[in-house]
Image 1 (spheres, rainbow, N blue to C red):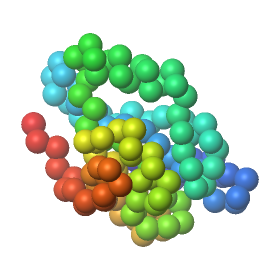
Image 2: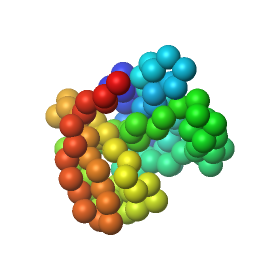
Image 3: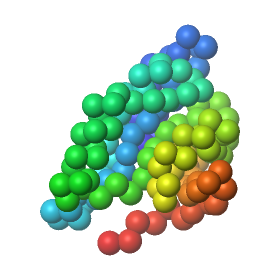
Image 4: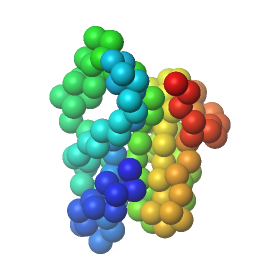
Length: 127
């Protein structure tokens, strides 16, 4: 995930673009995989992905091919803490784990954000 974040293009603001992706468990075999996605915002402070990419992920989840474990994005120059934008985004994904990587602090943290309430989670994914 850090490699994906560090290799992001430079935004018009002069910072790396926020990187994003998902962590999934492949249901046939149980392997954990990070699936990078393109940040179509091309921004250092926001991210979004193509609707067709979200639909592709949800189709694999609904077909029983994947289990969606976490939604990932990077913060290029701030701490690994949910911003107000992150909290607003999470309203559409209740009960989801959000991983935020800080390139400034070189750490990654996990959160659950439900109805605007942020709780830190651990990074373990049980088999």
